[in-house]
Length: 194
Image (cartoon, rainbow, N blue to C red):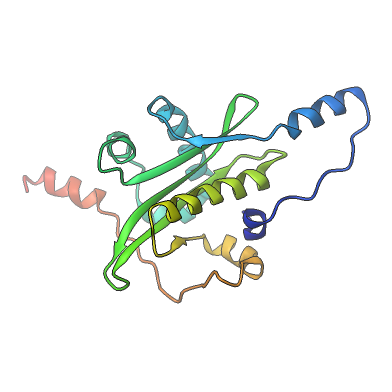
């Protein structure tokens, strides 16, 4: 995902010639629908999340194994107080992408922040525009909630690719991000009666 793609519309495509191509062009010209995730979307959202994680390769390894039970996610999305927000992108009746974000409170800044936790769009003619629109949905929610800032993390490879394209207001921080998976520790304690 390029940051410029998130913030700037795509240039228009040249006209396509030919009957089949005109049809494909019309289908691609219909903008993808982006909407908040609903309770009935859980299986679709989980499928997109699995796809996203599988495509991320080794960058997700430090986070530990994926939880096989979606109860925590469903609770965070739909039970008050809501802690996670998600949007699904659909094109031609098929879910092709999603974004997920969460809110937190910073002790250092003394206020709330909104963190874009994941953004994924399958290969599609409108992928860059869909990524941009999903990003803007998260930004709009951050503003609606009155958050101090919007934060997002990028894998090192993606950050290197888009760094020069980030808007001037986006600041790269010098923080180091550690991950300590706890699933094995919890399983070990349960096995030892602790």
